[in-house]
Length: 433
Image (tube, rainbow, N blue to C red; front, top):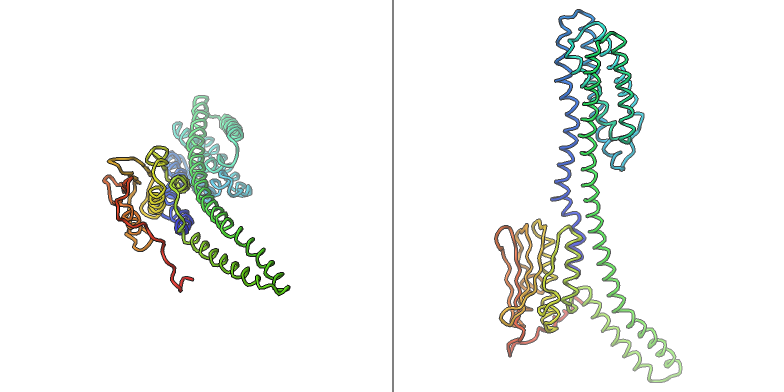
């Protein structure tokens, strides 16, 4: 299972770099750009159009209107600078330095004073006042709503609304316009709250889900390493203990001049060679595959990589009822097919089916998001699986199944034909030793 372990280790980087994380980054960028563009949209519409009336109201009104627009533009720039940090603060990944709010808060106070001054000198029309009030707090509140709890935000907005309405009343704004200004503030505060907080919450949830998927992939790799470590312990633990005991016995016999020490060392040599072969088998994954274990392992690995996996018929006659040789061969098919699902295409769902038909066991591994699956020769890959199944009179088919599906179908007769040799173990060349 060494190859599968390496594939699992690369699943996280492969999937992050090309599919889910890329899409999530695009959504995140779209959300941030939208929130950055919102103050500018307000500025060039509700914040600019009413100021056109100041051109007919004298030099003082023109100066106040120009100052209001310039300060508002600076406020929009500061809001854009703080949006990313506000998102990070909301997600809990990076604290927001509150000193960055000092200048925006001061500019909000200046804008409020300029608006009150415009109303005092009659620099804007009655209907333009409500539009300027709508634009007044937008740039400041977009990042601010992500930095404080909703209750604190609403309390601060209420205090600001009361102060602004009181100032407008003090300069002689009629009651009807005061009511319109108050209503405009309520609308803009709720608009910012209902558009910014849900967007940030949605992005936070999606990033948490992506982080959880990455953690699951890392846990799958760690679990596979633990399994490999347990296998190595099972292979070497007993044999090393026997080698140590027989070596001590050989030393004692040699010290006494007993010729039996040579027999003990010969036995140590035999056990050491056997252990070497067993370790080589574990590392190369040549141990006999177990179908129930491979089905469970494939399901866990695929789901850890974010691919939903369904196993059908594992408890039926095609699964636990098949002869051990057939189960072992199908276990290899499950292992290789799960590796291909991870390595190729962009799968979302995978179905593994075990059925019996016409005196044969049929295993199907089907996944969507199919890419090109290369044929790999040798003892691994689809070519190697065909050789294993052919030794049992079976066959293997792999290819597109339509609608973006890829299907691997292995068929093995329950009664192997006579005259077919059993699959012989692969010999180890001197270079591999």
